[in-house]
Length: 337
Image 1 (cartoon, rainbow, N blue to C red):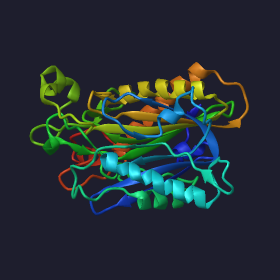
Image 2 (cartoon, rainbow, N blue to C red):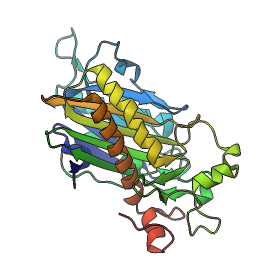
Image 3 (cartoon, helix red, strand yellow):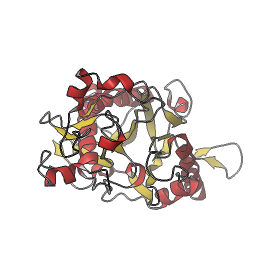
Image 4 (cartoon, rainbow, N blue to C red):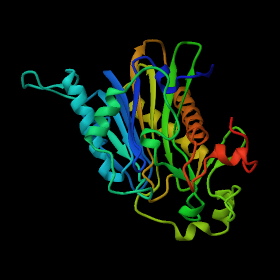
């Protein structure tokens, strides 16, 4: 078993990823396409989510497969991006069959993160953003960092926006010896810090007062920094886990639940009352071998944590919002791995 190098979530056969970035603000959207359909589940742990079609993923509900997941910036406005993904899929005859001749309904659950602090808040992902992201989707190398839904993502806001850092979107995958693949794609827009679970060190987060080092949210919280936190769903991490295993809706929902352990290990604090932390899970079912659900869920958490660290380390930063790379090059943070 090893982390797959170079592709991330697209190491799962049948999974494509596309981004579209609105550089004017910046913000954008990211689409995970499963055009052949995938069994899907979701687990929403944040108290202020912006989501679409998550009720449909409840295991008791009828629809068994989805065709894409749309992630976007722009807060709840960004949910419009899913409409563009639906249009892209409908044009290709992809969707849930209906009694109406030649009409299929693409199933595209979605979630958005709050990035309106950056630039002109009137610039938001639209349906056109979603369409372009879907059109750009490929099963090749996934671009990481300051693109798509991660274009406006930031971390380390416990002491205010002036001491925050830039994060972005990251991806990772594990390939098991038996042929099962587990991948994750995560857009990291957290109030707290990104922590590397391997070392326990802060990778990116709230900076010191002089802006040159890392203050460590774990210390700040114990000093009372969390008493005046901003509410309203303004800090959100969004992700998609995918596997080629054969899973039912209850099983893939359990994977989404267990994968949140990785989010909690790599982001401190997480799952706050005003976060919208949401993880979707997909099972393409192209690998027919036996599955140990508990092991798959535990490994999904590992992959989510790795993708979160990559979301921080692959960002190049913005003026006034340094990245982990920027602080590392100045000798104020751990080297970027």
